[in-house]
Image (cartoon, rainbow, N blue to C red; front, side):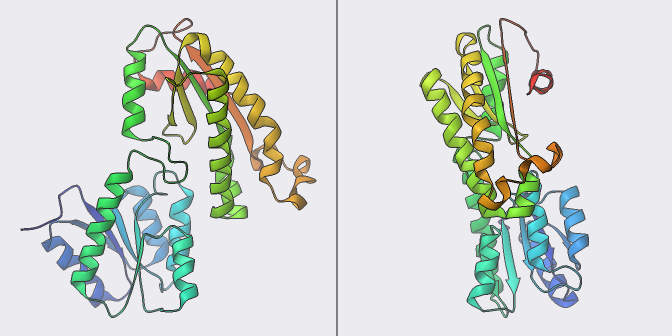
Length: 288
């Protein structure tokens, strides 16, 4: 019986025509929806246009290499958590570490057993399903769980919500790397969590909005205090996210090139919203 469900989309990036055709035919026979590309630039454009559930990515490609493909996918919110399995002839430890640093979930060298690759794809999909409700960097809820919480909130009569986060993290990641950007995310998580503990309640909910900002669901009485505390904690910390030598030059950068704090709050005492889209539009207008 075919194991892939029709919603399981696999994208194969491989410039060996015979191997690409064999993998495509094999995974389609297993029940997967398969798309492929032979060049890295083509793969990035295709994946951004139609996000797959897993990508099997050769490192040696005729234009940009597989590492660069993965790096570009990790820069975009929609594609940054796609499970990537590197497929390569390289065996050196440094090459494997380079792939793992970019967030690859697995690494298989040629020649490989097709059954082994199938099992690795299946395991990557299972792990991804388990992680869809939790951000892998901050361990806070995201995705469907947060949307359900917000949908429940706007249907109630007594609520408060805070949107807090850091703008410019993508450009920061491009300049200083994934490790540094993840460190910023973890530090911001800690500061926002502490702000809620100091001025909120154990019943308040903290998660990620689809934009990547933090969303805090609380009461009308607490939302203003929480937003003010988030701002007090985050604003002075921005400079310390940068390497020491960069801090002295931050004032020379335009705002569009720097990390910037954004915080906004709304409550049911001020507005009532029919859906999350109008709620977030209002929060965006208030963000400072």
